[in-house]
Image 1 (cartoon, helix red, strand yellow):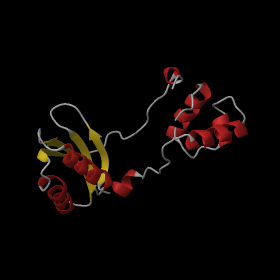
Image 2 (cartoon, helix red, strand yellow; image 1 turned 180 degrees about the horizontal axis):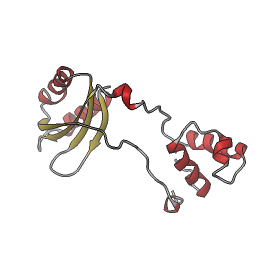
Image 3 (cartoon, one colour; image 1 turned 120 degrees about the vertical axis):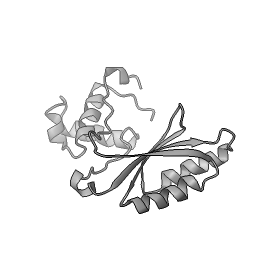
Length: 162
């Protein structure tokens, strides 16, 4: 990612976070460049790794019946880094894990787990947390309602020097 961002790139990245299927013609209505220049910039942003992924966000009703759990994991203070790294790798590879964060504070990992049922969640927790010697303790909070889920990072002029 050696590319330097400019104001046009910042504007395009902000717009694409809201709608990554926006056409170059539609983007040109908000960014003062020609559609062909916008298409080249967007292609370059993807090639340079500034856009990490293009994905579809499902309609809420498609995932409404899923059980969502936020799990706080504390690892053993003296656990081998190799064991902790293996735990993180297993969790990162698990399709049930929607979000995995290494955090500072009273816990070490925050894990958002999505399963079809409590039985499926319990099997997941037994396999990934209870049976792992690196895990000291874990605590689960179940999601009652999703209020906001928008993984957008608003960029501004301060991000140009990157």
